[in-house]
Structures are given as structure tokens and as C-alpha cells.
Amino acid sequence: MKDNNRLIVIKLSIMVFFFLIVTRLIIVQIVKGGDYYKKAKSVELKKVVLEPSRGKIMDSHGIVLASSYASYSIFTYNNWVKNKSFMARQLSRTGLISFDEALNELERPGFNWIIRGLGKSRCKKIVRDINRYGIKSDSLGYFRDRIRVYPFNREFSSVIGELSEDNRGLSGLEYEYNKYLKGMRGWAVFQTHPNGAIYMKSNYPMKKEKDGDDIILTIDKNLQDLVYAEVKRTVEKYKAKGGCAIIMNPRNGDILAMVNYPTFNAGSSDSTDNYYKMNRAVSFNFEPGSIFKIVTLFGALTNRVVRLGDTLVDSTGKILVDRIMIRDAEEHSILTVNQSFYESSNVGMVKLAHKLGKQKFYSYIKLFGFGSRTGIDLPGEERGILRSPDRWKNIDFSTIAFGQGIAVTPIQITAAYAAIANGGKLLRPHIVKEIKTGDRIIYKRKPEIIRKISDRRTIEILRKMLVTVVDSGTGKNAKIAGLEVAGKTGTAQQSVPGKGYTGAIVSSFVGFFPADNPQFVLTIVIDRPRRARFASVVAAPCFGAIGNKISTMSPYVERVFAKR
Image (cartoon, rainbow, N blue to C red; front, side, top):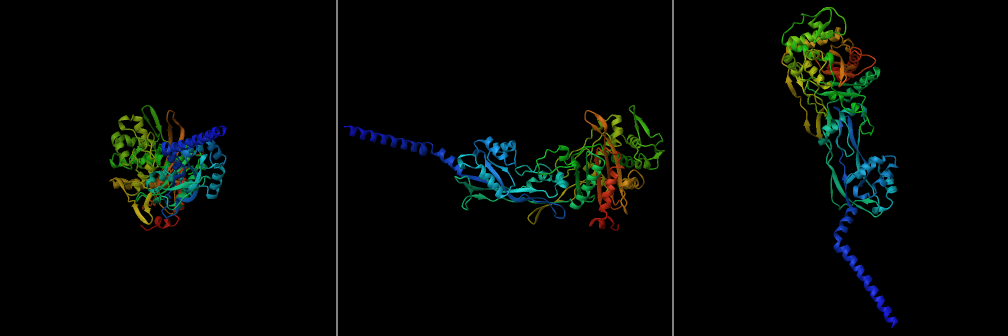
């Protein structure tokens, strides 16, 4: 009887155990089968991004200024990492990424690169050390990637710009031409192994990446290096906050060099002040001072309100406007219109503007492109600061005549002087020459005229007067051996919002050469020099140093000394 009872208990136990197994199988395979299948597939099969090779950026001679090389990088998927803080700590111990940076990447949804450009063996070691428990724990992978490099970083960083961590352009040409440079990402399906490794199979689906287009600039690296070195020397010599320079071809609007100093290191994570990160050649608003006097003089001569030999300024060198005394910087004798310009008389320009009247004067300011963006193919261009003449007080009207109370950008003043150099064509500056897909040119820049300044007679008079400024006026230090140079100095106080004029100075020189057959317009802007103030001492010698070196540099020596 006891044996029978024992047998019944065993049979019942087997039946209950079998029932539980069957019930569990039903739950796993039928009730929750879909959920478990999706979960398994999400862990086992994933898409990895195939990064395209971002297009190259090259100078006008084909020298590579930005390119991408193949490397390996560490990645993860958001749902792979259960304990994100623990994983961020493990990653930070590599010394390649901070805890906060790692945590930020881990919390982003979907696929994310975590540490990039390490090489295959280094990636493998880091992933192996952290992935100790396979797919049931925190998990990383590594795969092929593309890393951006800038071989001439400091000289070009403010122009070329930089990328975000996911290879999007953030600034400069990288941003402006991102749609051409970026290419198209691909993807490939890979499989995770229980030991944490990943691998791909040839029969898995994939989409091949498409490389980006290449961009050829109008900039000549040799000129860029020369200008950078001279601006750097000037900024450091005079303890200035910064400096920038532009060389433009006045015949077609090509930008041959565009320099900022100090600047930043593209691709690094250093926290550089925004002043040094921006391309100040297009985004720096400054009161131009005497370099702006070409507009006042052009308006007066075009309207024939004066003649060059007319007496304009008496020997006192001062004028009272709205109970404010305006004085010339240096004592002088009686000045004619011509002398007022090359001696840089502020009082003379005030008198010329008053002869013109507010509305006419404003129209000439707009004619030369001030108050509007030039439209150069770079991001961040400012339009300057130009108020409507209806809002001008007499003192505003008077100071604008000599370049105070108005703000311009270096690229605006460069384009304005180029219009004088080329006989009256206000050109749109440009920095990209061509865009190529492989060997096929898909875009080629053509010169673009914004407007024509039709008074050729006055333009020729202005050109000769600018030559006199360099020959015997304030621009003597801008001379270039064997060449006639036309140009103008500018020493201008800068107002600070909420504080007014605090003594800060911008020293500038703008000119072109050879004066009778202009090939180059060169603008030098030195911001807040402390060891000297006047442009004749600070900016003009920088112009002269650059010009003298260009005139002996191949292939430009043939152009500047070509027979007219």
C-alpha cells in the first residue's frame, strides 16, 4: 500500500513538473514570444554607421588643407548600456574622455561614437577590458571610422572651421559647404557574439557610403603663410588684442589670403574665447576712421561741391559741431581739399560732408556697400552698423564723415577699395573656386558684380590721391620697392556698448598695388594695439612688409612688374 502511495506521489510530481514546463514554454513562445524575439534580435543584430570620407579642402594649387583618414573608433548603442554611470567611469579611466563627456554620449539615443580615431589595436584592448560579461552587461564595440585632419591648422582654422563629433560642419567652410563636403553615410548589419565581440557577414544587408565632394579655394597657401606670419609679428610686437588681414584680387573678387591672429586649434576641445574663434575678417564690426574718408571725398568730388585746389581747412584745424569741438590729430597750416585727404584731416572731411548734405552722403555710403553684407561665401558675415540719416544728429553726421560713429567689417572695406582699384566695379568677394566630384567639376565660380560705380573721372582722381598718401602722406611706411602703391591709414577710437569711448584703438591700412595696374588689394586691421596707436606706425609697416615680399614671390613677381 505504501509503495502504491509513493508511486502515485512520484507520478503526480512528474505530471506537475511537466505541466509547469509546458506552461512556461507556452508563455515564452506564444504569449511573450514576440517580445523575446524582438529583444533577442535587438541585441544580436545591429546596424553600424559607415562613415564616408569627407571631401577635401584644397588651396588654389591643390595643396590639401583638410582631409579625412581611415581609423577605428569605439561605439555603443543607447540600449546596450544599462548602467551608464558605471560605463562612463570605466571609459574615463582610459584618460581619453572625461566622465561627463562619456555620460553625455551614452545618454544620446541610438548609435553613438564614444572615442574616435584610436586605431584598431587600441580600440580592441579598451573594448576587451570593459566588455567583461558579454551581451548581458554593459557593452561596447569598435569599427572603421573617418577622422578629419587639418595639416595647416592655425593659419586656416578661422576660415576652414571645424566639425561636430558627428562630422557636421560647425563653422567656416566646413559649415558653409557642408552639403557638398559631408557625403552620405552608409550602414551595415553586424552580429554580436555572446563573448561581446562583433562581426559582419557578406550576406548581411548593407548600404555603401558615398564620399563627399572636394572643394578648391581661391586662397594661395604661400600667400596665407606670408600674411599670417606678418600679422602675427605685428600683433605680438604692439601687444594688440588681435589682427586680421585680407588679400583680394580686384579684377575678379578672388580672396587670395584671409588671416586671423590669434586664432584657435580646429578639432581640439580647448575652450577658446569666441573672439578668437570667429573669422574676424568677415564678422568684426569696427569704426574705420580715416580709411572711410574715400567715401566722403568721392561724394564731394562727384557732386562737384569742391575742387581739389580749394582751401578747405584753416590753420587752427578745428570745427565746432553741436557744442563739441572736433580737432585734427596734428597741427598743420592751411589745407586744400587735396592736402586735407593725404594729411588725413578730420575737420576737412566734416566740411565736405556738410557741403553734400545728409541724404546724398548716406547714398554714397550705401553705394560702396556699407551697411550691407558683401555676400561672401562664408558664414557669420556682419553687415556693419549704419543708422538711417533720419536718426543722425549733426554730430553723428559730422563724425561719420571721418569714419567714427559707423561700423564696417574688413571684408566690406576691402571690397570698397577694390572698386576704386578696378575702375568702379563693386565685386562680390568669394573664397571657393571650384567643387569637384572625383575629376568632374560640378561648380565653378564666376566673377559677380554687385553694382557699378559709374564716375570713372572721380575714381581716377581718388586713385591718384591714394598714391599721394603713400608717397608723401601718412602711408609712407606702406611703400613697396619699385612699385607705386595707393592706400590710406586709419586710426580710430572704438566705442564700447554702455561705456562709450574708452581709449581703445583699431589701427588699419587698406591699399592696392601696383597702383596703375592693380593686382592686389590688401587690408590690415590691428585691434587695440597697446605699444603704439597710429596706423602709420602699426598697420602701414605690416602692409609694406607683405607687399615687398609678394613683389618678389613667384608667380606674382611677373604680375606686379608686367608691362602695362
